Image (cartoon, rainbow, N blue to C red; front, top):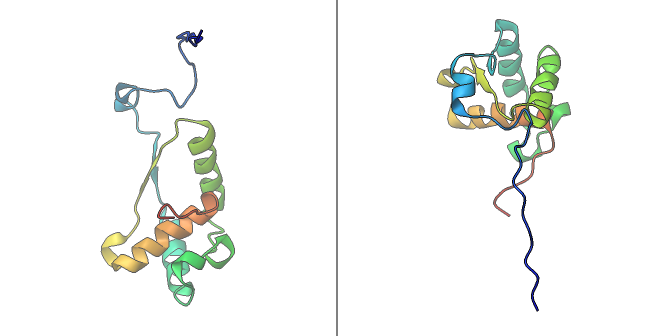
Length: 118
């Protein structure tokens, strides 16, 4: 005779459990980049041009002034609400590859990149 798994529903209490309405009245999930952080990103994009994007790592895309905020962002993504918006990336100044390089480079500071096309 087959057994049926019993499921109990309980309310999960966790920062990553939220509704849109929870964030409509606040904006602490928006991270405004400072002029110094933007310049640092521009410099990292320029200095890393010789490295193929897929070979970038935190060491080849240094962001020392942005490092503490990236650590805070990483903690928020992993242990907090699970999302954030970075505002101020100068994508209007970059071509598509430079924008991709900036996003990938930031990602390298958040964790280890893994291809999703495998």
